[in-house]
Image 1 (cartoon, rainbow, N blue to C red):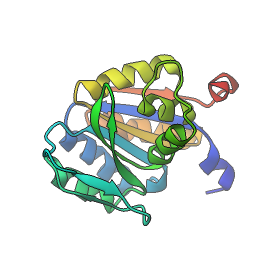
Image 2 (spheres, helix red, strand yellow; image 1 turned 135 degrees about the vertical axis):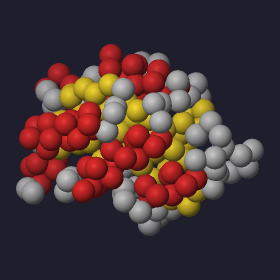
Image 3 (cartoon, helix red, strand yellow; image 1 turned 180 degrees about the vertical axis):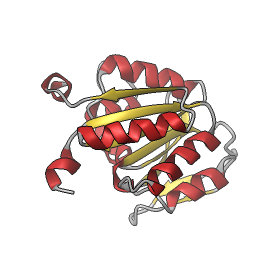
Length: 183
């Protein structure tokens, strides 16, 4: 895979109504040889304890003890970069993959875009259009899980087929365009 392919901001987003289906999609993508460094997942952990439930470590590995700890713990060994965020309006979010860096950059740069949350700003920085971001924020608010695969048009097309076969409630491809990059 070339660096040009890795840097493309094409993405496919799958929305899942359960963590089991989202995890199955991750495992299916892994078995198909999809680069796990190009995969992000986000979900709301509404079962978390009253205490701190996780932290982001410098080794890009998450330690997690919460209501969905077994689910998230299984993904930390597969995906790269993970974090727990408390996002106003969305609540406790657990995020893995390149989306973590995008959210952190948004928070550090105070680059929140037009009333969007840190999650929304992160999704926009990955090339997802604002109107779609609003829909994805609503899905997360409704306790659904987002799985985002990034890559070339070919990689994203292949990932979409796999995500759809894993019973995603919805899938959408977001091609990299100059208009998306300007957002």
